[in-house]
Image (tube, rainbow, N blue to C red; front, side, top):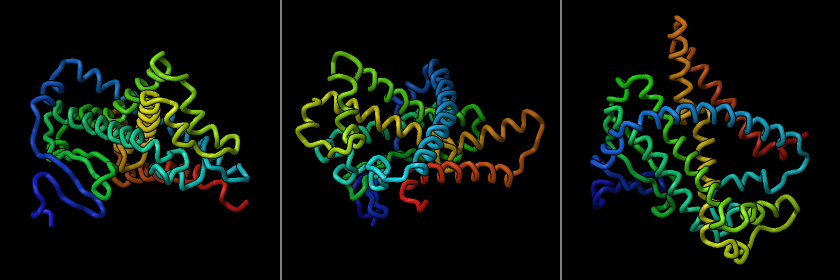
Length: 292
């Protein structure tokens, strides 16, 4: 089927992939800038900090979830799905801003990975975007070639960390705009989208969303979704950037102190961290529904 599709497109389960296998002189120009190494080093620090902070955050959320006796909209499992009209905090009227936030979050994340690959002389075999049902952007991706196996430890740390760092930068920048004179009062979008759940009200209407204005809505969702992307990907889950960085750091730390860590031990530590993170997230979401 994929052979019959026109141009750079292929299909998977319920998903259309638009991709490119061509390189980019612009990527090379940015990656060759002397400041890029310092930028990606900052990304490594940011990911490690977010990993620690993220685990503290999900631990607190899990404790809050299991100690509550009643479920609310804030921890309704349905509201963990980022689909406008399904998630109570994402009304259909906010769909354009949610989609824009998801697109920006995925593109800046994967563009960071691609740039770091170019800087480390690791080729990118394919890069693209995944569209659920051919319409809804759910992910962007970069597939490095086999040269990544020969890259240095520092280069690998940079490659895996910079995507999270880019999401964090966008979240901070968007939050800065929210607190500027260009938008409504900085807390207005938070009250509109989430305040109702704290007082037992109803989800925001299209009129309430429109009253915030385009820039306020856009910056709110850019900040919220990029912050969530950053924290989620920084968690020590084996398939996420944070899990890969944890694995590299474990191996490198052991080498520096002269201790040999077998692949079995390394896998056990990373998989244990993965299980812990997933259990904490699960408890945060479904804790109030558990029998006491």
